[in-house]
Image (cartoon, rainbow, N blue to C red; front, top):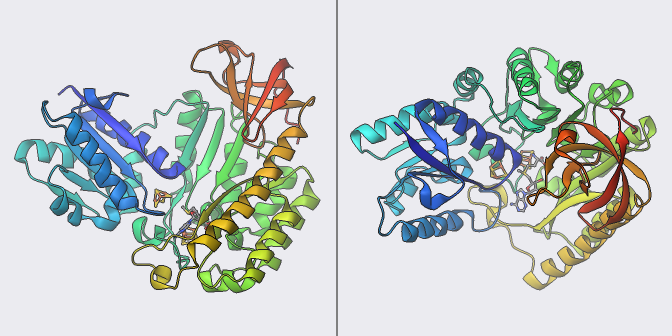
Length: 442
Ligand code: SAM
Ligand code: SF4
Ligand code: F3S
């Protein structure tokens, strides 16, 4: 069978990883990838359910596909990801154009599901939570991502049940992949060109497999000589254990940016969100890491206008941002999610929510701009990932994950080079290459 699949991915890095792994799987039954959805005979939408009208976005997208294929043979339409898990067979009922619905813990069944549909023309929904079988299956199929900076899922699911969040319902209970399975995948990624590995999990620092923790994984992965950088995301403040903090003293390749979502600066709000930690505990982790290495910087996620957020709570969030000086953060107004504890809580007036978001983003963006400005005329180390689309420049990332555009060449890809920063804006640094180096400065 020779077929073309178009995969559109929404949501987090784990969805990006999953989309690549889905492709690694369907390749085995004869699918090639296409970047143009009108050329596809299979259209797969990997969905996210985290905020806003997630479900409606999916139906809207299907509407677009329908229109495009009005006078052509209908493609096989697959909905994967977190909306698929949350909505399951309802999607097949509401939109007959959809053929298959498959949740994140059933991807090991994707080939059989497609083949069965082709043979019997039956609509299929697969939304069982079976993380063990999924990862066993996927570990027998090589991860062909082949990118300089590659994602590697080590843990999936969540048992924390923050009151605002759908993830425990869409990704299922916490599961940590076996240690050796992960190291094997890391080695394979390296053999295929990975020089940076970003370890992924919904609670990546809750990783625990037969006593092996995230710190063990980092130390083992950085032993691979070709690896130049290791990162991990997303961490929960409650799981910033001493072993993880301590490895910042010894690790040679762990990057000095800690993404640690805090959501709010107010203990009252953290409690009503069921976040299971206080601001004092968060700051204690911050202080310990800063003491180990003052170059360590933090980034975070914020939920603004959570039900019950009063002026004082908002001011506390503001104060926390001033104290930690996060260099990069995501901030969104609270969005009630179906099936969560916070679903029916009284919302804060839209005008106030928008004003608060604007204030928070102003200060967060200011921090980001200041950080980037402070690097002008300085030399930063950049892991080169690619050439820009027009091939005139190279693209890479600084140790703090900031995009860097500079006059690099094809032969720089996969290397760490020194770049002198000439200009910057909020998201990007622009510079000129100074020299090659494989040393880490921070
Ligand atoms: N596990 C991570 C943690 O504990 O922070 C984050 C997972 S979630 C995929 C990513 C971010 O989405 C969260 O940190 C939160 O800021 C945001 N988020 C989740 N549910 C939300 C909601 N109902 N409304 C607005 N933002 C939300
Ligand atoms: Fe969602 Fe909370 Fe779990 Fe993070 S820890 S995935 S925010 S429930
Ligand atoms: Fe979205 Fe699911 Fe990731 S809800 S953020 S795709 S875990």
